[in-house]
Amino acid sequence: MPESAFGPTNNCIGIADVLRRRGHSIVFAAESSWRGRLAPLGFEEMLVDLAPAADDAGADDAGQFWKDFIKQTTPEFRKPTIEQLETFMQPTWQALIDGACYCEPQLRNILADTQPDVVVEDNVVAFPALLTCGAPFVRIISCNPLEIRDPALPPPYSGLPTIEKTNWAGFQAEYDRTHRPMWESFNGWVQEQDAPALPDLEFMHPSRHLNLYVYPEALDYERASPLDATWRRVSSSVRCTETEYQLPEGLQKQSDGSRLVYLSLGSLGSADTELMTRLIDLLARTPHRYVVSLGPQATELTLAENMTGAEFVPQTSVLPLVDAVISHGGNNTVTEALHFGKPLLVLPLFWDQYDNAQRVSETGHGTRLDTYHFADDELASAVERLLADASLRQRLDAAGRSIRSMDGLAAAADAIERIATS
Picture 1 (cartoon, rainbow, N blue to C red):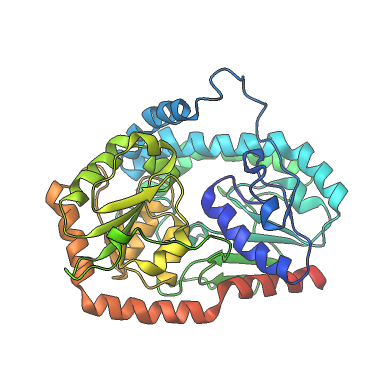
Picture 2 (picture 1 turned 120 degrees about the vertical axis):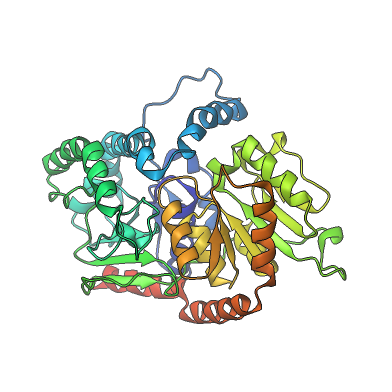
């Protein structure tokens, strides 16, 4: 059961595909908007609704939905992370909690029907039915691992540096103020469903069987409190289910020395047409070539002559072809970029993207910019620095080879398989 977002769902698809090819039966209890997308990959769909069915009025105008959503949401992305806690983070957590509460009866029915040998969840909130059905439970974290709290590390979602601790306490105090009443209510409901109490100010239980977190070793954190034996790092989880990608002839390798760069801000970031238009206009002035993931507002965006793109781009097929990546800092994109040894320019928007941006920068695997406030010349300069840094490319090539040799998909599937058959 993945969170209804592309990152967690694609992560689960990659691992589940390995298990399927080993002969296991995979049932996805994904959110209902994934209907018809998982069955063609060989999985059974027993999907859940996270809210009552919406009124059909305007349902056919998906573009208008995204225009309205982004118009309401993007002002929040312009705020510092500490100010996002009350106006963006807390309402988002509440929406996720509401979804978990709403679908609990559906999940109990699915689990009763399927009688699984193991249950796997990649989400940020608890679903008590998954913990109480009697099958071993596996938790996957495909967000930045600051979500696994440690006193030597910055608070999650803050984007604060690991060395300078000045603002840690203030951010955590504001997180407590804005989130504790909601956490107390959810924790009470979780226990009413016969599940264990949640850890303090956390919305998800660790598993007593197996916990996997997806993050490259090159970016991972040094902890004051070592994780126990139930925890395992998966350095990457790059699915093999996407189609091959062929660059248009005019954008294939050029003799003029221009480089190829991938731009993706995820479904929410790319739906901000004002931001995307600015990036496209600025990158059009550079001598390089670009593959652009256009997202849900694709028809509202016009690419320059040095670009190609589409609403959906097979990211894992594009990344091996490019020389650098411009990203919002979603965990999947960061992990996949490192898997293929590509330097990153990160433009964070919300949630753990700020933590990933900070970690990429402070470990020297790329750089970050202030997404809504960088000067025009800063973007081109940052791209040029990444592309010109030969020592960075060498380090990332070595990191990518090491990550790929670990075969994270197989390692995750092995661990889940052992739990399922023990």
